[in-house]
Image (tube, rainbow, N blue to C red; front, side, top):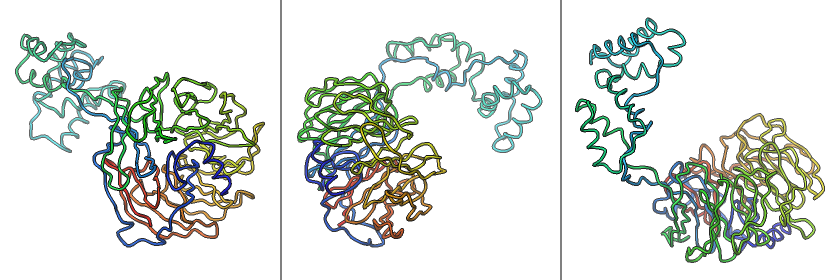
Length: 515
């Protein structure tokens, strides 16, 4: 196992001592820490000591779910940073009309007139449960079943607004200008002043029309590993891409690589200066950058490789779709291969030219893990579950599989001391690599985050990231050594470097001392 780790360290080109964490799941991309200092065997009631919390680092829809990396006293996080920016223009778009209560309906005119009459006659004292009961009774008397299925939400909303709802005649008047764009706020207000609408309605129109939009920036944030203070921040404008760009950066040599919304970047790891950026045809998802053989391997729709020095495309493999699972390197007889888990299969690709050598049953969001010539993956196929293969360039040989009747398949396994550990899919599972025999299994609240092992202990996030769990790394028994409430995010995996644990929180990064 130690020999395998050293080989992986040498061929990936990843920098620093083995105690650093330069990429997704650490130096060997497998969650195994070599060269760890002695770590505490138990924690006090309050958990491991908190060293620092960083400044604002948004997550979720405003920053993604990528994990952090830690190298030579620096911590790196990549995200698409969303912020609201003012709009110079004003547009009466579908969203504005929807906020006002407009929609296309095919209800009879007589019924619409009755609905409007009854709405205006509603007493403002009729609210809550009594109002809901009144609405159900009205719908039962006046709507056919097809009309109820199609329009009940819209009808109920108008009754709930009561006299404050914009009249249908006014909505139809506004819909005549649907999609109209005004160069500035003054032009919009001048148009609205001429419209035959009451002052109360005009106030609602002004509130409904957007005055700002969500803007996105591809960001690589570098923090001081000892204090959490910002060392530098690189950012470039991008599209507001929601949750998709949630990968982990990779530090290799004196550079750091990361994927944004539509581009992949190479920066100087010390200064954050841009070296190159390459526009992508596809959009990166939650898979993370891998550097091997002077190539930057990237899951962005298809599996692709860029030249690490220049960012030029080296190859793209359209037969291997690449999504949330990160590609893994496999070294065999002086050659480097890539293992990519996606769709319903796991594929093996030659790292030099991207040629597909074979595909095997697998698939899902879990990244493959390799020890020597053995690969373990958590498949999306419940009948296959946790599966291991003996690897060769010609074809893999299935060793065993352990079915898992649980839909969640994001957590990646560990291979440690001839056993496979899976701390995900709502369980803790330990299985012998050689025989496939289950050593132990425990029902737990583990789901997305992937664990790591250091100093003979396994660390994992549970209960949606609210708890950090420490287990004894042994196949003999499931032995819990400690549980600490940390309140981290539940998607990013923890990073570890030189005794320090780095966690991505809801709006910052936190560092804990595990020594």
